[in-house]
Image (tube, rainbow over all chains, first blue to last red; front, side, top):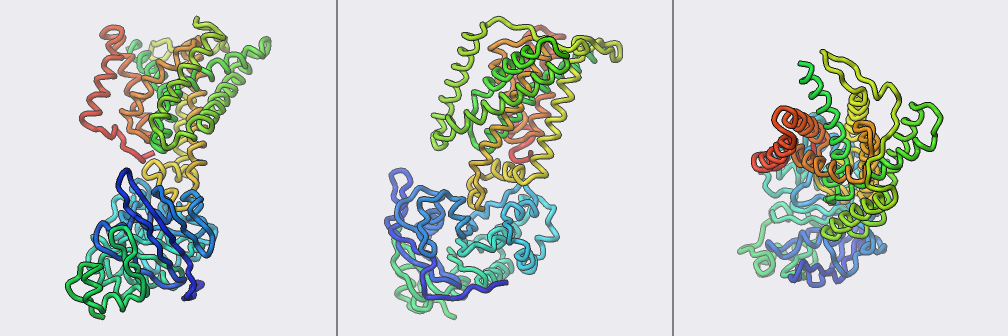
Length: 244
Length: 294
């Protein structure tokens, strides 16, 4: 398995991303960049546009602005072509195909180089092998999250994964397993992570980008944000800073 | 007893025709959310294409003529459908009302064109002698065309189920019926699947067009429209996007129409089908077999 190198160069660059749905402007010109390697957290209170930012990067919502991956402009491409360039996506609602089996869900995400990724996936989530013939719609929320993460990890040519609230609604035990899986995944790819569970995010992410009212209000090192009570309160609504 | 057997086989034959039209309609709606009101036009054009292809071989074996007509009609349905998708539907993917209007327009224009060119009177199709004969089962003299229609519809059903369950494109279509955006987000070009689904739907409707001519013994410009209405009812009763549901609903609708039209009065069967549709919509809005079940 090839490890991804941590770099200071921007792998993903988002510049002036605007999304309007009907009359309401959801994103009003979001700009940030994601360094290669590791996990960058996209944080903010509920409803500030984190999910829309991920969907905007992928082209799942109409948007203007610029999104580049390693210098290649993505905004003119259709969704599937953006994914083919190396942008994987794990949506907030998991969006597994409920009528398909676990194995079929994974097979859809397969690429030519997926074979060796199965070893990683089954190491992280052995249940997926055991439940290969089970319909994904009958799995628990945690197991569905495993399928969603596994689909994104199967594509070894993904250079960055956009992962939206992977621990939402999960039991504490499952939250830990997903966090461990993200840590392992970050060894082989770059991750842009939306995560409301700040205790989890604090220990996973290296850099953070904070959104507020559709714009970036903070970008930098995670420790700078969460160790400063004033910043944490202002941008994340926390009454106290999170400890290590 | 013989009457019941005859009604069963005839009802199943009619259901087979409904299924062939409904299968494409159901997949097209399930995957693309396109209400294709031009689907009956595929049936009509294929019927005429098959008729003239068979007629062009006048003097040769009746079986060869019928078979060539069958292939020509099926291909004509597929080609017409692909052209419809690429030229008319694709530019309107984000405008569902526009799609409905364009398919209505195409259906009306095709009907007018076929009527204007070939006239509105039914044309008798020539069939091999065996097909115009009957086979006696439990005392019922059953036209052999019923067996042909049933056999081919069953083969299409099995082929479609194999395609949907055992091939990668089938997997993409089943997943797309559930969540098209997520299929794209896995790096898959859903647009190709759209064209493929239209091609499959058009070919099935084309096959139905030729088999309809075989079943009824005639072709006429307006039968496609009549069949389309029944096929839409079948799709909704069976469950949008479900091939198995369409097959089950087609059998129920075909049998119900035949039995009630015979034992009650002409037209009662058609009315009962509409009542069944209303009951399904009220009690089981997702249809007998829900979405994505293939």
